[in-house]
Each structure stands twice: as structure tokens, then as C-alpha cells.
Length: 460
Ligand code: FES
Ligand SMILES: [Fe+2]
Image (cartoon, rainbow, N blue to C red; front, top):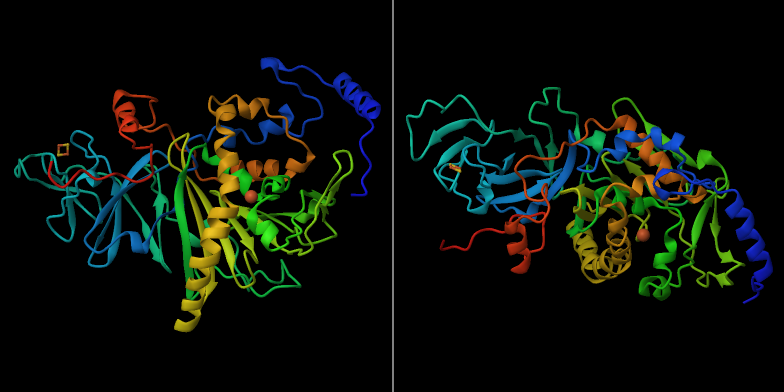
């Protein structure tokens, strides 16, 4: 180690000077030189208000393999309970809250025809396409039939993934294309965002794209999770990870932005909205490989040029990762205000069966255990541990962001400008009210608050 030890007298002097420049704010927070000044915060108020997520957007709901023909599964996105049903190969999505007395249809799915789903309690029966109430098992002549219904949601199934457009009940605009809520694509963006080193990054929407991944529930607000994904200063948490050591990765401790043009806003009229970070470009970013004050140095030698972007409603793309020809997508789908579904999906274009098999093999034995689980579990741990600070909302005012958080602030502003709606606190939904006796009973029985509905036992 060649770095010199910090001089304690210098450090003390520095701390005193910094303390003098601090200004006390309301609520006990200190302004100092923080990057998220009160003026900056005003520019992302919509984001601060979006504890239940951004609504009127496309979100991944299930992998295709998780919904067999004839089955129905319940999930929750932005606090909205949603039942997905596959009938004759096609997937439908309806609000999973019976009109009659509010039970979840997915708890004990009852499908009496290919075009309907019936509530297991008194038999309200809904058309899968429109959500209209078309019959009631217990009262087939009731005058309410044909006059009301539950919200239905547009669905797109592509290359092994089921996406749902999660919308407000009264949303009456044209449904935007799925591509407007997915990362930018190549080769059409090659001219704008050329990359000298690697082949075109694949997309979920490409012909012959194979999407392999996992999803699991994280226990923090969704915004904390999104921000961790592209955080330029967080690589410290991956420093001692087995894959970092095994691959002898020269993973920097941070990535310092030297030219703000390295964070490029993405805001095309009909396309996705967000920004892209040109991490690989030495004209815009320099890796932090050493901290002389703390006598730390990065040891690995295998550098890996990569680039990240994030688009509304919170979709990360890490190009050229974990390996060339592969891209990692991440979604942090709001479930409630304190849980999110963490999706990690790797995409590769595989035109032949042999290529599909080879990709699957690497996924099963390398990417899934060592990257998606091994490497990214560090991120999951960090997010869960931020939740206490942000749980009551005061963390968004009190956090002391630094210059290394410039991309976090840019994301918040872009999301505030371009999100199509802020999800309201849901009505009559588990998680909206904390610690009901039912939730405590479920927790005591070993059922963590979760994304997916746990179905009733067969005989009940
Ligand atoms: S609660 Fe659904 S039919 Fe009564
Ligand atoms: Fe990370």
C-alpha cells in the first residue's frame, strides 16, 4: 500500500471548518453543502409524493412460466390487487377485489367458463376482457348485473414475460405502447449513444430475445430500490463480494462524474423517459480507485466497461453485464409503500436452440447464483436497511446527499416530470393500514407480506 496515513490534525481542522459552514434546518436536519438543497427538492416534489408508486405505466407482472393455461394468480402493484388469468393461451388482468364484499378472487380462483372469472364467495362473475359483471351464481336475475364491473388492465406477453398496464380506474386515454416504458433500444440509438467496445445491447422486445430472471419481494419503499440500481457511489458494498474476487474485477469504490454531459437525459416524445450514464467514457467519469485519507485501494485488475440507464417508471438497464451480448434489466415494482417486487432479468438474443440452451446453462450455473443472487443480494440488503430512515417520509427531507448523488437527483427530477400519475393510497387493501389483526396473524403464521396471493388450502 503506497497511500499515506491520514494526518489526524488535518482531519480535525477540516471537520471544524466544515462544521462552521453548516446551517441548521427545521426538523433537526443540517443543510451544509448537501446536494439536495431545499430548492432542488422542490423540483422533485412529485417523486417525494409517490410513496405508492407511479401509476398509468407498464410493469412486469409474472414470467410466462408462472401462469399455466387455465390458472389464475393474484399479485399487487402500486397497492392495487390484480388477478391474472390465462384462458386458451391468452392472459387477462382484472382488479382482484370483488365488487360485492371485497375478497380477492385469486384466493380461491373459480373459472366456470373461458371468458369469465367468478368470485368464490357469492358468485359475482366478471367478463375477463371488460371486467363487466355478467352474472351472479347466487342471484342470476339481480338488477345490478350488466350495470357495473371491475377495472380491467391491458396485458402484453413478450418473450417469456407478462406485462400489465397498471392504471387508475378512470384512466381514459390511449394506452401507450409497452416500448415507451422500457429502456432505449439498439441499433436505432447507436448513432446517439455509440459504444466503441461492445455489440448491440439486446432488448426484451427483440426477435428471438430470451428473458431469464428471478423476482422476489424487497422490504423497502420502491424509490430506495430504484436509486440503488444506478447509484454511482455505492460500489463499496460489492467490494468483498465473491464474484468480484473470483473474477479479479477492478470494481471502483465509486465513479466520479467530471463532466455532467456524461449523464444524458432521455426524453423523446414517444419513447422512454429517464437518463443514461456514460460510465465507460473517461471524458465524463473517472473511477475512484483509491482513498488516500482512508488508506484504501482497489486491488483487482479486470476492468469492465459498462453503461447504465434508468427510465420511468423505474427500469434499470446495465449494458454489457454480466457479460458481453447480455444485458441486465431490473424493475423495482411498487407493491405497497414499504414493499416492492425486485425483478432481475437477463436478456440475450438466441436465434438457435443451441444458443438458447447455452444461455440457459450459463444462467443456471453462473448468472443466477453468483450475479443475480450473490452480487445483487448486497443491494437488497442495503435497501432493506435504508427503510427505517425513510418509512415515515422524513428521510426524503433529512438525507444529506453529496455531489456523487447527482444522478439520483437527476432521476428524481426526470421521474417527477414524466410520470403519468402518482398512485393514491389504496382503499380496502392489505398494507394500506399497518398492523391489522389479520396481518399480525398472517405474520405469526410465517406469511411475510408479499407480492403474490397465497391461495387457500384445497379443502376449505
Ligand atoms: S364477496 Fe364476491 S360475490 Fe360476495
Ligand atoms: Fe449494486
